[in-house]
Image (cartoon, rainbow, N blue to C red; front, side, top):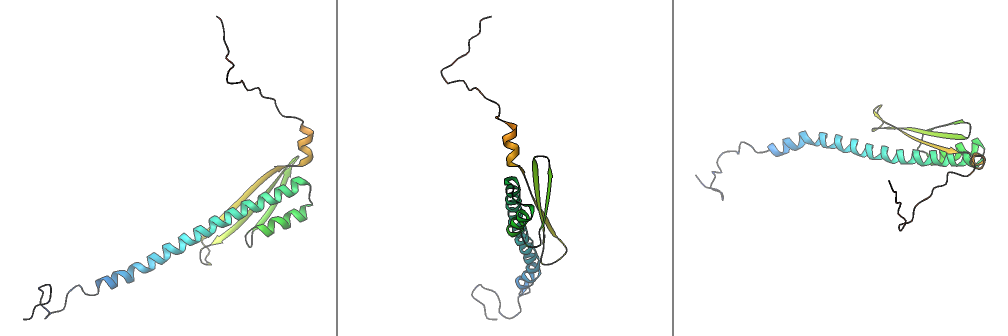
Length: 147
């Protein structure tokens, strides 16, 4: 019987031939699924940043005294597609909330990301007056107490 380079007989089939291909075929869908979920998570993180930016833009515009319609339009332009922008306010504070849903490959499963920003209206800051004053000791000053 002729011998191969490694000293094995070439007469019979190797019993494990093709096992690597079968293992690869089984593991490939799992790898693709993990990759899709990871990329969707990255897209959701980017949408979260866009929601926070849009909420900040809208809150700043309303705090400056811009009309609510223009502040909402500004926030919608900066927000992800199909985002919901809500405005609420109590007294001198204005809050803008931007919420968007990021599905995984068009399925119902996904992430809902939210950005919230609150700002003080400009006229309210002047009405409050100056803030507290702080005294900071210099490095050379030492307090001594005699008891």
